[in-house]
Image (cartoon, rainbow, N blue to C red; front, top):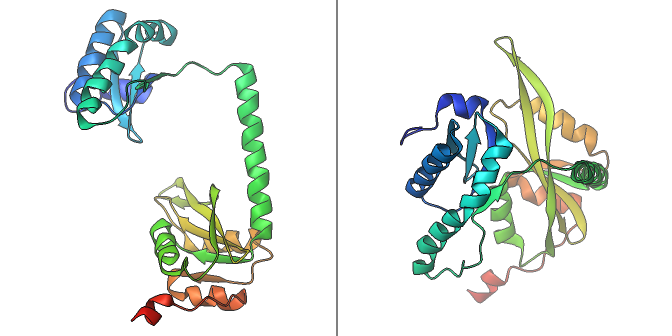
Length: 243
């Protein structure tokens, strides 16, 4: 354990013990050092997705027993950190112990995942138009058009590995994310590539194959084609009328 980076051995081979939210790095470091001393295990932590993941090379259940006894310290650190800033986090739990799922919980998650995959397949089949647009471009289109259209974004989305590309003897995934919105009742898919390696032709082939009822595809610059193909007549631009 050191002050600048996670121990490489623990980071690569360690098993997750708990997650810590919204606590300053210095306080996490002090607490994890104390935890490692009490458990007599080789432990460390690293930021993952904005949260601190604590890992160990030792016995996870034994480490979690100690975490259970020490978690009040993390919660107290969180309250001291955030209450002076006016945040009402008095009952907030800043630590999540990562207990293994029971068979019932695993079965429930598998069903939820299967249901979501089936939902995505139905959405793709029902898609009436496809927009190649990342989150910022979609937001910019919404900001420009939501007062002139009945724009309803759908909260659920998808992430798909659509192909693999071999580079230097290694297979790399080609991935995209998709979000749907209804524009005047018409289902439109907004997708963008998200992987390190991108193959635009393979992505477009996958999208065309899985959206058989789409009337076309445009990028954000050509959003007007979406309106034309779906026969959407926007309301007048009130901003121009005001001027």
